[in-house]
Image (tube, rainbow, N blue to C red):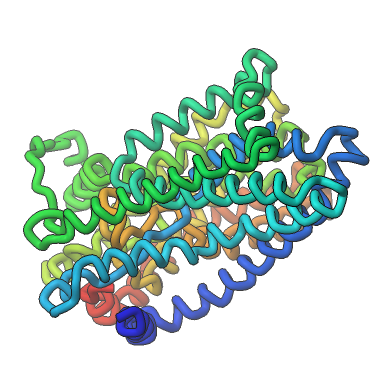
Length: 490
């Protein structure tokens, strides 16, 4: 049976309309994963000696002190990037295959997830170093087994929070507050949790507690999905009563108003798009890594323009990157109407421009770090409006991945709004302005570098109609391939 499921997923991958693009991204993601594994392996081998000789602290106690926040970060990392196993469930329910087999295969796939294997590259070598340095093997084994069980508990907790976003954000907010209190030495939650993790080492039999918890979580997840695996229950789309919103104030935009109203409704009503709005807001604070001089590697002049583009372009990258995938559910219907591509794309462009301006205004607090910091944000906004807004729309024509707007409510078939594919597609949009700034910076100084990037952004804005004509032709050429891709189940 497992062989059958693997065969079906293998065929689904290679027969997908976006197979070539997915293959390229998977190769790039493979190199990224390899880099992360090597990094964690290096940390696992060197953490003990770094903490002992450089920080002059006890390595095990220090790790235990940070474990709570490590596990919380792991859960957040999984929530936004780990995709739940995609099994084409509906066709399988008509076949003589036990539902327990389908659910078991889906849940067991998460056990072999990269997000679980990654942690082993840190904790296994760290545990080996503990034994080499004289720590009792049984004690280290108990501690290691307990931490491994807690990491796998995160795996199954993530399965549940995918359908209970309010619970996730409540817990996340609580730990953000606790982290802030620890940073400012007001209240240290780690002083209460560190003895718990230390107990797994001092009394190895305590490791049975998280192992038992892991077993309960797996059994609960299995029973939950097994109980709801019906076409007329768990897999049925929920119907909600929504109020009609006219948005009459948008009528001033003429024919564009129809598309603008639909986009605003999409952002307000769907879990996937609301998550995108949240992540776009968090991008405003991304510049703190660069403008506070807290990280020495980011003190270079080029990183300022990099940060400025990210701070002002969070929504542009997160939302614009997936145009027209946001409308994949009814894209064939849109294409059957008497509309112009230019009007459709213009509505998306205006939405991104408005969000970029709002983000730039909210980011005015960067003036506290000097005029150069906020100048980088403003210049980044000009470049985003003039150039990157066109580039994301252009690139969207070649992304044929349908979006399930209600996917955050289900563990099966889930696709996150903030994922590695989105990040990889931003690379060419960030390198170009850094190169332009470098030319100006080395020629006449940082002011000229800012001016040069701004001029490129203004030029892109002035040639908007010409560029939109080119983009429109690309969308027309890809029209039927896109429709065929959106009709696929996978």
